[in-house]
Structures are given as C-alpha cells and as structure tokens.
Amino acid sequence: MRWVRETPAHWDADKERVLGGLAPELFGFGAPSEGDSLGDEWWHVEDGDRVVGYGRLDDTWGDAEILVLVDPERRRSGVGAFILERLEQEASARHLNYIYNVVPTAHPDPETVTGWLAGRGFTPNAVGELRKKVPVGAA
Image (cartoon, rainbow, N blue to C red; front, side, top):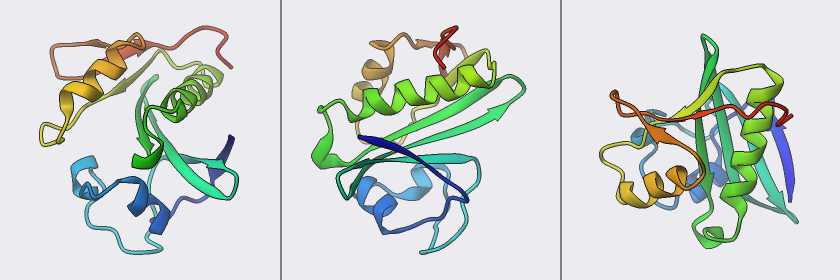
C-alpha cells in the first residue's frame, strides 16, 4: 500500500465511493461537488491503481482531529490500521499531544467504530471525543 498526500485536497468520485453510501454531511463536509476544495490535510491509500482509503488530520492547539475512511470492500483487511499508523506518524512529526476522533451520533454503526478506536488505545472523554496520546517516536 502507498500513502499519498493530497495537496490540495479536493472532493472526488473516490472519496464518494469510499464513504460507501454515507452522507458527506455526517462527517462535516457539507454537500460537496466534484472538484470542491477540502480543508485540513488529506492523504489517500493506494493499493495498486485503486484508492482504498483516506486519512484526514486537522491540527489545532497541539492536538489533531483525525478521520479514517476505508473502502467498504476493504474493511477488516488492515487498511484502517495502516491509515491510523500513518496519521500517528504525521502527528508525532508535528510534536502534537493527542489525536482524537468524534464518532457522529448519526453514524449507522457507532459501536463498531468506537470499539475499533478503543482497541487501538483511544479512550472516551466527557465531551464525546475518543482521544489517544500521540506515541513518542512514531515518526
């Protein structure tokens, strides 16, 4: 698999496909059209000539919100773990303190996502975030 930074990031058919029918609004993207610019930092994962996942990092005040998106056909194949590891490396290189994720309340399977993150060291806090201390030397 190959980790590729998108500079600048734009909404495209691959992102739509990887969402697997979930509404972009669910993740705070609004209703993007093909070619619309996206904020934050984005990377995609290529396996051969196919995009199989995305990672997003939004750093503010020493922490970063992350997003891990995996092609529905590639879930449970290690793509998500690959993305999370790369996001942790990016956060470590920036000397960030924590990475976190907020599972949307309207997500169709919040327990699975929350469990997956908890299994990788994320712990919930009082404001609904799942946080993880950025591993030292992950870069």
